[in-house]
Amino acid sequence: MSRFDWFSEFLARLEDEHLLAHSGNARLLAPAHRLVLDAEDWGNAAKVAAGLGMRHAGVWADCGADCRPGGSDEDGQPVGRRHQSEPAGSRPPDSIAVYACLEKEGDYVVLEARVPLDRPKLPSQTPRFPGVDRLERHCHDLTGVVFTGHPDTRRWTRHQAWKADAFPLRADFPAAGHVTCQVPADADYPFTTIHGSGVYEIPVGPVHAGIIEPGHFRFHAMGEEVLRLEERLGYVHKGIEKIAVGRDPAGLARLAGRVSGDSTVAHAWAACQAMEHAAGCAVPPRALWLRAIMAERERIANHLGDLGAICNDVAFTFALIQCGRLRERWQRRSRELFGHRLMMDAVIPGGVAYDLAPAAPRTLGDDQAALRKAVLPLFDIIDDHPSLDDRLITTGRLSAADARSLGCTGYVGKASGLPFDVRRDCPYPPYDTLEVKPSAETDGDVAARVRVRMTEVLGSLDLLDLLLATLPEGAVTAPVPTAASGAVGLGLVDGWRGEILTFVRFGVDGRIARFFPRDPSWFTWPALERLIMGNIVPDFPVCNKSVNGSYSGQDL
Image (cartoon, rainbow, N blue to C red; front, side, top):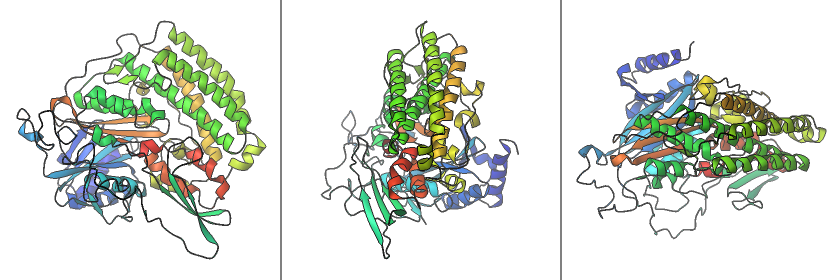
């Protein structure tokens, strides 16, 4: 079966099941296919997709308001009312559009259905795709869409911060929120309990001993063995999706770069890619190469940091010191050449904010050669050290079946036998001109996730050599045309944690009406709950670090 044959089969099965009137309902949401379904067919479409072995890449909703957030606009009109100069089509509709993105063989399809605003109900797709559990709950908390048949009715994002019948992404909810809640945040969250002789609970967080973001972990254990782990996240909810409304493209790129600071290049690139698709902007080749150089540098820096931290969690501090030293030198060079240690705000709509000086490619090439020389013996030690092997091999094993059912990508999926990589399987420029070789392991344990990281560091160094050798001349920015009201775009970028998906819809005056950034951590956090079962409590820190989900990336 070729890459695109499955889509024809998907259309045929939907039509056979009378879920799609005709294939003319297929449109384009670059770079994906787009299928419009009736609301009652939403759940059955998921059944067909699961039967074809498709992977779920995310679900979100768009309430359709094209107005500025904050309670009133610049003219003092209440949010939800359009300006006299705005076209009638920009009036907030009486329905909510719900989207679900599915992938197979590197090709994407976005399902779309509309539900009435006064009765927004759709069948849940979680029974077929467990990984979208929290995404559907998040969608409900912010838009009010009810997913019937969902196996978990607890609220996910709403920590008693707004009324239960209020939904922040609707037009009548101000960006500043309502000061109406008298209940302490996250009071009385109904964690699942396990009863039995010898079973006890261990609550950890949300405030931790280290300088990390907040998250609560509720363990059920017997002796030292973990029987169940349940996470409670959302403590750094920032209202990203709400405060994006009304921004211009440059402002959205800045915001996207702050969804998860350690993935600032990848998230900004995905947001810019989505806006550029919607606006029909052609990015100069040199800018695309520079984006890739920054993205690979971001990947290397974070993998080095994680490798050192994983080793430190099992008391092998030598690796922590060496990886930290190499990462620091790497990031200082990023600050020198790209304006910021994390390269924040370096990716902008239409290109990049910084060009390389004539001598910079040689400097970068020398750095890459020096890093390769330094990490090769270091990785040999990490890969074959008895004390590390004793703690990492067989620890925190995630099966291929679990990784697939949850939709894991990046190093978590690759370590469990799922080598999907957007750069190779759905290549975007300049990766469509390069050979990307994703690492693949099958053991699914902490040791496998370590090996994937080491392989990716070396692979990124090879890609950087190629990118510098083929770096085009020319401009590094292009003007971004004003997108038409209602124009939509999809961004798909492989960040260092895995696939990042970003949806953008433009409103009036070329400003943002809807922004949804889906970090890979939405799928890898649930994987941590799976892989820790049967392990001992003292192994949780190293299992957690081997997954290293982003709290901020998941807490929109």
